[in-house]
Structures are given as C-alpha cells and as structure tokens.
Image 1 (cartoon, rainbow, N blue to C red):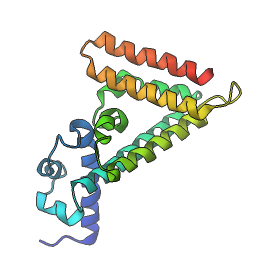
Image 2: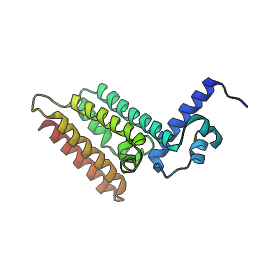
Image 3: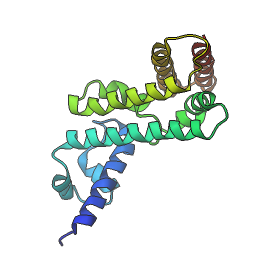
Image 4: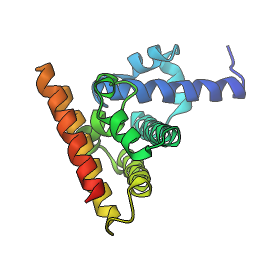
Length: 191
C-alpha cells in the first residue's frame, strides 16, 4: 500500500522521535533497526525509504534530542524568577537522573557519541554550544568576566554528576553527587 508524502514525512518524524528516546535509553549500538522501527509502529522495510543508514538516523535523532534538551533549559529558565537556579535544579535533580529516555543526551550518550562518526558527533557539538550559550546568558555578569569558561566548567560538572549518579547503586551516594555538583555549580556561577 502506497503512503502519501505527508504520511511518509509524519512517519519519518515519528521514527526520529522514537530513535531519540530509544538511543538515550539503550545507546546507539544497544538497539537494532527492527526494534527501533517496531517502537515507531512501522516495519523495518520502511526504514530504508526514509534514511540513508542507521548512522543517518542516529545523527538526526541526536540533533532532535539536543534541541529538546536546550528548549527544556530555556523553558525552565523563562518560567523562573531565578533562571540559573532553575536550570541547575532541573538538571541536577533525582527526577532528571531517572528520566533516561527524555533526559539529557549528553549524560545518556556522551561517551557513546564520542565513538560515533562525525555526522553523529556534529549535533552533539552544536547542542553543547547551545547549552553553553544558555549558561553564559544566565550567569551573573557583575561579579567577574570569563563566563564562557565558567559555563564550560558548569556544564562539565553537571553532565558528569548526572552520569555518575546514574551509575552508582547507593541512592544516598547518588543524591550526594547531584547535591555536591549543584553547590559547586552555584559557586562557579558567582565566583
């Protein structure tokens, strides 16, 4: 049965959305095309009509995930009287730690992305730049210059803390990593 162009594009967007979540949950190599397409409610044969390769899908899904993450930061910042604190609180929360499918792709896929092609790593670099821009804009300016370096330190600290908090099995230790990172992120921002 032939699918309209409109339906084909809708299916393509669905596959990108599903892949974005499933890659964050399982890693790029942790899920096959058959299961990705099944998650989107489509057959594996439909994949090759929509994408050049799994690498092509991984790049598009990574871009979607990074864009979602930066929009989320912007939304929480816009809705708060203390935007930087809102971003730190959102990111370094136990709720974010638990949301692997919808959470930050840097924490979920960072080390995996480093081993991928340039095509897949590109969206991560763009997303990192967008995250740094948000942090830079939210940091207090009066205290000192050098907010770009502070933003880099904060992002590194925050991503690392979420990653470690997901690894450790001890709940108290996991929360301690998030709390310690939140305190240090606040210190960096105001130093």
